[in-house]
Amino acid sequence: MQMHHSSPPTNPSDLSLLPVLPLLALFDCAGDEPLPRFERQALRLLAEALDCDGAVWGWGRREGGAMRIRHAVVHQRPDGLLSDYAAVAASDPLTAAFIAAPRPVRGGAVDGPLGLYRSAGHADLRDYLAQYDIAQLMLGGLEEGDGDDLVWLTLYRAEANRPLGGREQLALAQALPFWRQAHRLATRLAQAEAAGRPAPPSCLARLGAREAEVARRYAAGESYKVIARAMGVAPDTVRSQLQQVYRKLGVHDKIALLRAIDAGAGGADAVPQAEGGSWKPPAR
Image (tube, rainbow, N blue to C red; front, side, top):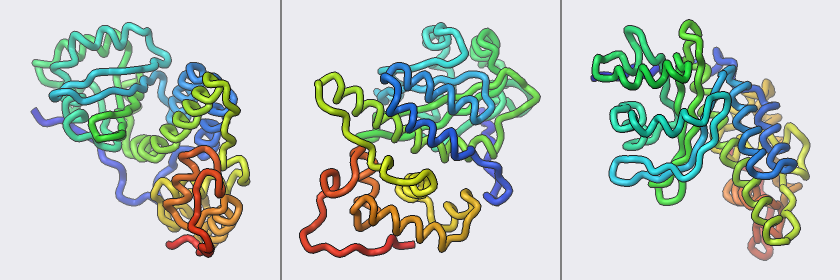
């Protein structure tokens, strides 16, 4: 059976991508909320930003072509969504394809001529999704650790006439690194609190809102031109803001910037620099 996966448009300038504010709110939420509440709030923020009426995110590990779920959170669907899925998981081609070779985003309609589960052999999957009022779904994920650990986010719409298309898919792919980074920060804060240690300050707290956005985007691999287009500024403005970011955080290159963000604290304490090293502007 061939599965239909809608693809993002080829011209990014035609897209209305995920607004910046929900992405920044993820980090505010990570610093202000206990970990379990952060997980629920972050899922709600992303679902609302992408105009979806339900979502699940989770962590798991590939084991012999199957997925062992370690932890999952459900938004706007009954908890039975996860437990009932066990009965139909083995026949789900979308999940099987994702486990075999995780992609940034997959998605499409559940039913219809181009539906994901249109064959007669998928009646059980269609019944399961209808039970939980799911007509459209979108699955995004990232590999973790040794590559067998996976983190994923599945978004749902109950409306069959409003398909999740290229705009939503590209926006989700863009949001996933931010979401993962915010969850890492929330986890570190929770671990520090549990151990009775003072919470490490986020290096991004030293930056203005636009500088923080540029830093996150650049560390996530976006080019000057892509960042500039998304933020509605000139590439030279992005370069200038990155120069300020490097100076404020005391880092000298992109790798050090990524480590500073991941460590949750910037400067020399989080990213040791070679003695006598000189600051260099970020490469394009």
